[in-house]
Image (cartoon, rainbow, N blue to C red; front, side, top):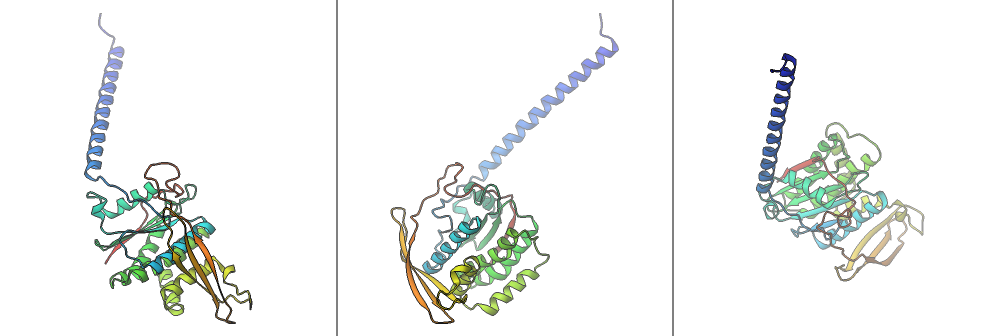
Length: 307
């Protein structure tokens, strides 16, 4: 006895549905194979974050500037919760088999977990010495409008110094600009400015007021630690602060340094010793602590440059 026309139609529909489901499953399997194959073509490894602030594996930064920058970024994290880290490498090919700098920076950012997981406002500043390339990678919370600000900072603050192999000035001045032009306004709830006028304004301010790397770093430290800049003698915000490392921290022991304070208004001066925390190596595992970072992530926002 044959099937009724209605039953035959339903059976045919079920047959076609099962056929399309099988085709879809096969397509997913093929896509997975291609994805695994593609990932094998771009196998990458990641450097260990010995510090949460500065990891100068390319030996680009002088000891004095690195110590000042590390202290400043550590204070930034303590007082604002924003994790910003600087990484220099000799070349990308040592770590990535064919992957371009932009996706590698995003993968590294997420592997380390830079920034607080609840705010995703971390920043990675990557410099590739021999490749003569650099990238500012922003956390996922920054809208893509901030990419143009990062681009302006790269063009105006980093690259002019890097082209002259003046990495101390470029890294110090550029890092200062990242904080003042991106991190600070973002934390204040401001939208990214339109165009590059904001970068030009900040460039003019810095050029008019500051004439050296230590002064530029002192300015940002002043912004973050205003109370510490008030002279105990005359009460004016006129203290200059300089930190000098007398013994570097290692993975076995803490280090020491001396903080010098001088008042440009009344001549007050003093000095105090301080302890530099022992280095704690970041774990290469995917644990929630990420070796000390807060577990933040990036969606690929930021900007790149070459010189």
